Length: 526
Ligand code: ADP
Ligand code: ZN
Picture 1 (cartoon, rainbow, N blue to C red):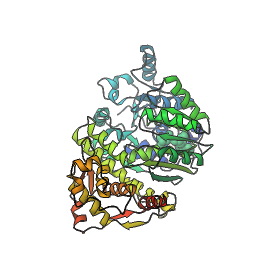
Picture 2 (tube, rainbow, N blue to C red; picture 1 turned 180 degrees about the vertical axis):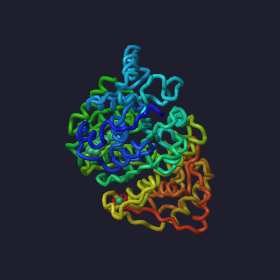
Picture 3 (cartoon, helix red, strand yellow; picture 1 turned 120 degrees about the vertical axis):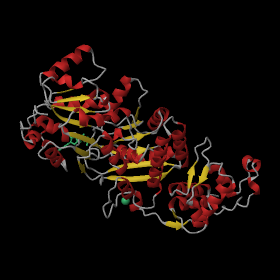
Picture 4 (spheres, protein in one colour; picture 1 turned 90 degrees about the vertical axis):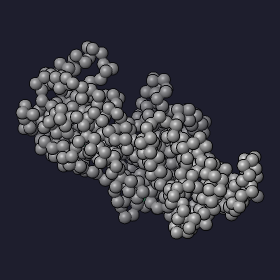
């Protein structure tokens, strides 16, 4: 790239202060910027809110030429372009949604060297002739935003991102910077391989968000649990995530009926109403936004005080990213999630019935079980989450439900043997509900019809309640002794590791809380 003169127009720190008005760099921003300006490739793994965008926007304004930014969503591009323009930086995006006139104007600005940044989609940047758009203007840098989209391990796989590996040959000598807030080791390796970033320096900032309190509860009565949670946060704003559009609508209505100021947000809404609700959320300080995951990408409200999940998120990455929208201002915030056995079965079904390849389905299942591990851990949530991203937790978290109220554990080996035996004796063809009926010795149409009332395991588990057994089964799933079959019934199947439990080679240590609390409650009943 002989045209490219790397002489600085302005030093990064001067530009940071003059244009952005920030007194200083944050975290590893300075290192990244310096590395890029020296003409090197970089992979930047910063959690949400740590200021990734600056890592390419700042070099872009410091050198001659134009920076090409690859981004997966038009909406995301537009937001960034708006923000840059507001700072007085010349930036545009090229999208197929533009009119011929608009796109002609942008192209001529580009060729005249008037733009510092141009945002494009992954499919466009690798099209033959793309480089011609620039005329004699040198490309100073290529930034690949949300680069986890290239990995099928990432929670946002985009086929178009696979083509971006070609950028290395298409633009030799142009430094590339890939950025993401996702950093589990699998995804990281995938990104490096797919984008051919072998020579890139990897910059990782800690993924810990010390101001977020994690709280994951077993579903009892979801709405009441949510209401109690929201009442604690009355007068502040937050997000409640639900899986379906319908549940979003219903939950928002129900909350309003119960004195919580709430509005819905999902992709199927009337665009005007949707924009209204989003604006209200941005402006008001005490609004609960009930939303599908369609809401969030590019949301930059600093004082979101809580994020609640009424349904399991898609993965640990998804959970981390969604909860990460809380507390960007650094003030105490809370991440709250309610979940139960049904969520696992339902999620499993969604994976199975989806039309992904077997390879992707296998990955999805692995991700579900990683998430389940965090939900069912008897240890620190933060530690479990950070471990997922390959990071060690601080010695003392003190800011999650299990740290604040340490859960007692108990030796659940006997109970586990009974549970696993019941799964085995009923032929590994039934879901948890039926297997629990058998353990409790309940005479139902199904136990009779299948002759399960004749089994030796029938009624051997009367010492525990239904809820307690559900907890045992969830934990057995999380520990990998059983799995949910890929069938319509969500049948439980034994994993090979279950043999160790039968043979008493492994002790099964379980959380006591979800088991005991329920036992007490049931004992209290007349
Ligand atoms: P990310 O993309 O990593 O989630 P952003 O790039 O959106 O983060 O930045 C998050 C917030 O931090 C933005 O409001 C941004 O303006 C702000 N920010 C970034 N760098 C700095 C800095 N050096 N000093 C102060 N604020 C910063
Ligand atoms: Zn903790």
